[in-house]
Amino acid sequence: MAGTMTCTLDSRAGSGVRVLTVAWTSDASGNATGTTPVLIGRLVKAVTVPSASVAPTDNYDIAMTDEQGLDVLTGVQSTLANRDTANTEQVYFLVLDAAGTPLAQSVHPLVANALSISVTNAGNAKSGTLYLYLEA
Figure 1: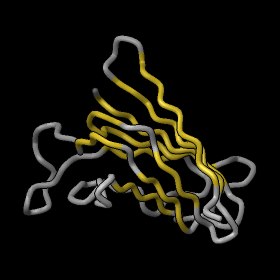
Figure 2: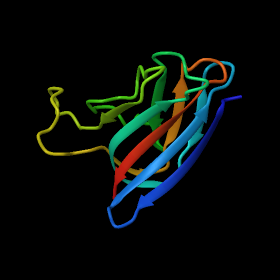
Figure 3: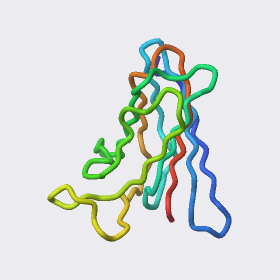
């Protein structure tokens, strides 16, 4: 079993921003996997919220791959590794240049397909929520 994951996409009226809410619960191995609906836009920000009643193990990880199996956060300043067990955290995604410096312009990773999301190292039957903010 790979845990459970439910994805809900919400468009913020007139804003050009969409929010994908990913609620997850890990299996006995501490993992949860799922696939988002097709997303078209740029990933701007992610917020991770651990459950108040069954918080994940400290430093759990979240990864996202596209339909070609590529990590969508490769070459991005912020990743979703080492999430906190008790605190809500946010990261902004900025693309890095060849030297590893964030580009001066607001360039965010482009997605144009469904993403596979995997949570690992969360502990047995733990849960949380991931919010992904996308610009259309």
